[in-house]
Length: 218
Image (cartoon, rainbow, N blue to C red; front, side, top):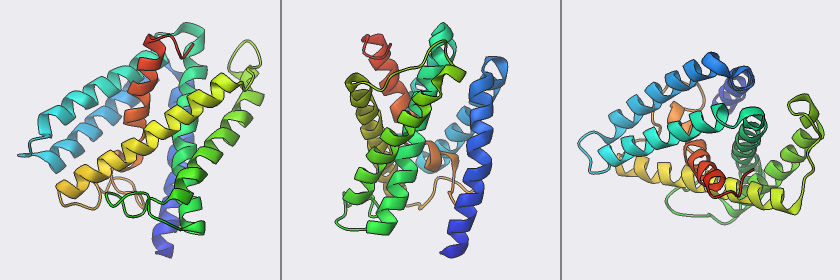
């Protein structure tokens, strides 16, 4: 257990800065990074769902999810980086907050689909997402023309994206159970497969894309 935790921390310390490098750089570097992630995620989904009824719908969803990711980072001009960073920070913070609070406080299980998910973890995910977005906005002038305020509207968006990310985690856990596997792969030490790590993001990003289309995320 301790070794797995150490692997998880070390992998995160490498992957998170690396991911933010490509996100901040944008352009062809980000698109190349996104393409690699899409190919790996598609392969993992193929391996876990082949010959299952949800095989094709899953691939269609992944295409929509990664298209939404491409759009949000590339097609919003000067706002693209700040909006994309907001979404990613919420997803990562939700995941870390859920893991830490869930392991420290434990308590009632959130759902039978994903036994490790607890109500304390859910609350921890919300809290860390709110705190980290606040911190990010305090330094937003490094990425945007002006300092962005944390308003009631932003709070609502953070809670919605965090909720979608947590639901995405549960949905992928459900399909892993149907496929009778523990992890979607072994590419990331301590974490499993890429889909195990981005399960919340692949739901939060298309949800955020729909928020943008509906004029809620500007």
